Length: 114
Length: 114
Image (cartoon, rainbow over all chains, first blue to last red; front, side, top):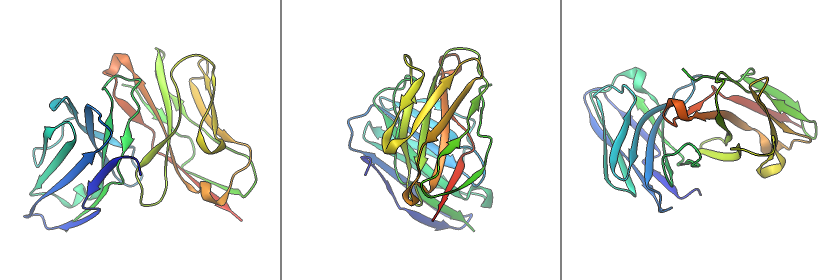
């Protein structure tokens, strides 16, 4: 248990569905991240939030919409996804966003887009 | 752009044998280096980190890594592996000049056989 909880753990959705991924951290951290992990590819950073403000959007398509209502919660809203969006989506948090800050990861949401 | 190369996608090894997982990075400027481990159906967990100081870094579960600036490498080693070490291992680096983003390698799957 790392203190970062992601729900749901598994999600199957059609291309016309709208769904949301949820991440909650109990570590008192100020920065939160979304990563995409696809088979045989390095982890891809998607979004970074620092003190609830988005500080990084790594050229992510608009069908992915993040939301950070407070420093403990992070959402990823999904709509009109494509089959190539099927992947493991990982949430992480850290005390700050500087490069020495250790990121703590959740167990991920396994997303399948049909 | 910063890149991280993990030279082996899979490393099979017998239980109680030593293992080395290789990692090279491309930056010539100051870097912070990390190794993470991902057990099946779990998120990433920090094994060890190099920020400064001694180039030999010890981490959890008996792992250690050595920072070699001239060879731009940060190889992970363990003198005697256990079945429970079977997992995927990720090398990662942050470089201040690239916005402190954590850049991951593609991962190395360590398979420990009895």
